[in-house]
Length: 239
Ligand SMILES: C[S@@+](CC[C@H](N)C(=O)[O-])C[C@H]1O[C@@H](n2cnc3c(N)ncnc32)[C@H](O)[C@@H]1O
Image 1 (cartoon, rainbow, N blue to C red):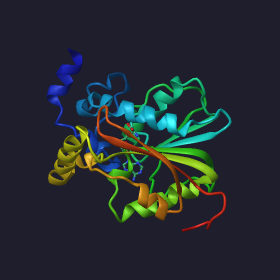
Image 2: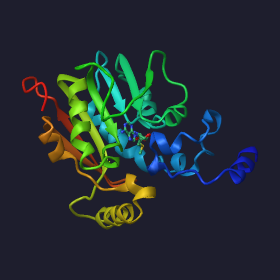
Image 3: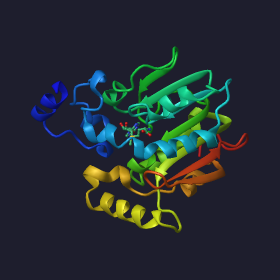
Image 4: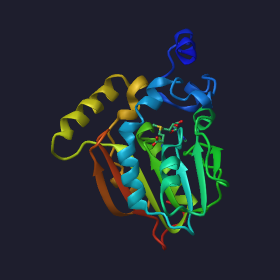
């Protein structure tokens, strides 16, 4: 009841998919009450869970690896990772929004959260062995995307693996019209729903110097594609 009272007096928070540091940081962090602030954010997380699980299976981080989750949000990836039987030795979550990070909740000892922008990460070159970017890339403009992928490549060591998760339009099947409808909604009301924009980043990843390993569709929840790629051992230091 306490939560309901507070919700009624609060202005409508920005919708989850409009979440960026600048728009959401005005909402006071309230870690004990994440289902109330902002409701659309937490209450739709289940639509992402299956794709995040698929991505973590594809990435298969090993116990001696250093993992970074870029665009951590409220920590769905980190929570799933913590429940796996094999957990990497170092885990860092990075997000542009301090307010989103404030909602992550308790993490295993030693796991780090940092505020940072994927377009200009303040991590040294080759700091990580494996990287996940879940429901982040579709938020970027076509101009921002190559710079962001260049940054992801830079902070991964040569031979390191990356997995991305984005909403996408499957080639066929019942999920295709659903994905098309979500993509149209994102286009029509981009301020509110741009996070639903369909994006298959495979060709952009190749242009940024990654080698594609495999991809997998996840059709439970938001129709999404998970793409696994590697930073080749040999290649230009900068694209
Ligand atoms: C849709 S949420 C995804 C959260 C989480 N990865 C998940 O799968 O549930 C997108 C997150 O990306 C963050 N974000 C948006 N633009 C960013 C940027 N330029 N750099 C870093 N994080 C960004 C937002 O603050 C938000 O927390």
